[in-house]
Length: 446
Image (cartoon, rainbow, N blue to C red; front, side):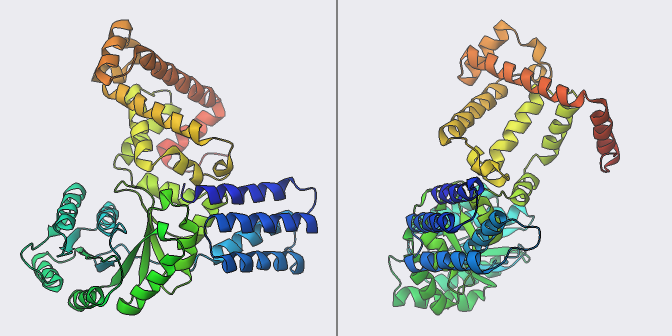
């Protein structure tokens, strides 16, 4: 999960509140000290961390909890609201045909983000055109072209044109109407006059609906100064923070950028094209504190390329018709939705569960091995696991690069899954409810 160490520290604070016999001055002092330490370790500005904890202390001692709420619940709510407050307002970013200008310094992940953003649009049914307006680096043009091919979107470049604004002008004349046009621009090692003037010329030609600044989260608190400088030069309307998956300074970048007038609209959370998340402070803090984010999990499910097959596999599981083919569909869907650690963070309570990173990694490796084994089975075997005996096990193991015991482990896991599901649906009342919901599409009978 993004800012995992900060999340663990803050969840530890909430657990300390839950275990406390009473909310008194001693517990409050301890909670304030732990929050300060967690924020400072995540590179949040010292003054910002002190101000936040002072507000937590003041509100906890001066405000009265609502009727029916305990002091513990009220203190947790105060912490949630104050951490939410330092991350700025929600940035609304519409996924529709529009012109988008990407800006940023060299090495911030701008070109990769252009591909991720194109993928994000196309998953929502919006056609995209990528424009290579970095006329100073041929490698950037090659990279963007490769990304466009992977995404399956339109692409425009003019390698003989040294003026970025002319490239953009020709791209607009070439692209069909009703595209979301994303322009990747040049970067520098620092903000200089030449860079700003080129961006302003491109902006004048493009007339963008959105100007997005791409920033590496590893910049920490310096991200705020960079955001402010670009905003003054070209009117930044939103920020995309990249490389948050491995940045210890992510808290500094998040809080620093959020205090500017440009809201954070997306987070880059990995290297893959699908690892771009809409940034909504409310959901983000809920996940950070282990309160879950079921809405984002549902959105990920809706974005699956084989959503219909995944739903059918779930129905087969609950009605006793589950096959190895259904299991392969489910494992493929899990792979599309992200790593187990990310999926855990979306579920209320599980984000704070005592599951180690090593256990999650081992499960992830095992699931990948199972998918390779399933891919080595033929159609008859996927539909009828009883066909798989010793000879077939050896053949499947050779084809998947696994060991025979790995194939047997998969078959055992498959059998246990079916038996567990059968134990649930053997309840006659539950089966009637499930069948009614599946056939009529309505809620379960009372």
